Amino acid sequence: MKNVLTIVKTVILIFISIPMLSCSDSSSDTIDIMSPNPDTGQNPTDPTDPVDPPTSSVQVTTLTSLKAADGLAIDSNDNLFAASYGTSKVYKIDANQAVSVFIENQPGAAGMIFNDQNELCLARYNVSDIVKISDQGVVTGTLVSNVPGTIALASDTNGNLYTNNNTIGTITKIDTSGNKTTINHTIINNSSVTLDGDNNIYVSDYESGKIIKIDAQTNTVSTFTNLPITGGIGFIIYSNGYFYATAITDNVIFKINMQGVATIIAGKKGVAGSVNGNGDVATFNTPNGIVTSTDGNTLYVAQHGGSGAIRVITGF
Image (cartoon, rainbow, N blue to C red; front, side):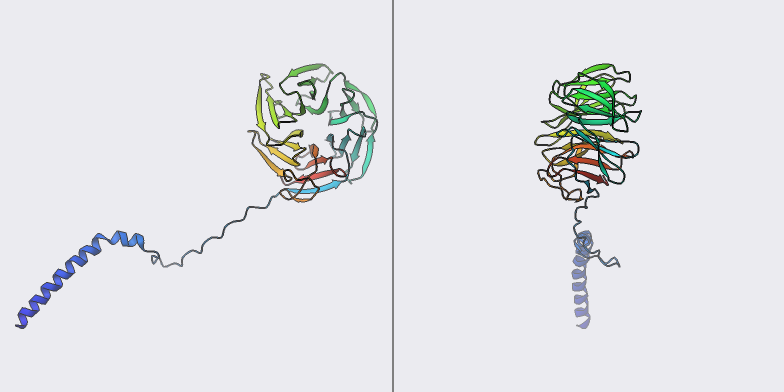
């Protein structure tokens, strides 16, 4: 009897074991996947906290209080010059930040640029001409006359000068001998002109924020970018592979790459002020004139609003 019971128990155990082994084999993959904490011999990694947006590397400071926002230029010694349309004056801010009147009685003083002879070329909007001024602040001659609506000045790699004709939708090119050539485009109320390293011309539309490109080889006109503004583009400049533009009514400064992609590097859109600090905290009040230092690492921006100021932007 004992032998019979032993045999029965053994058979029962065998039948019980077979389905258990079969179940274990067929579901082993599922068990491994569902296991929430497999034993890897290492402690689980702590969850990562959300990363805050990086603080802007751009810094904005104030160089001096000065109401002269209608054109900026910089000489080879990094002396800064600022034109005041309203007072018909050009001011000089030297390396020690000393401010002085460089020249007076220049009706409609606007855009400026230094030529290869270190003469300051000044666009006089009210007189429709461009004059040359010595380093002593004396007018030495008229570079060109009868250029209506001249505001901004730019030059190409060959020393030719360009000015926008704000009232008639053209560009005037002045060669090194003083000869004029008219370049047609489609923007009547244009606010500025600049050239890139390949001598392509760029013209800004004051009202819409559009910037057009005029090809240096074919004179083909195309849209380069449309800046997202509510109105009032000031000066545009080119330096070291980028463009920079002031938005007068939006109170911001744009940086634009060669593909026409624009970003705000300083200022708070729609907020007027003179707060210094990081680019995303700083505020501007109707910025207009803009120029870079000779090495291209510093931007100077002239703002008209408030008591007027020359602002400095670095880290862009």
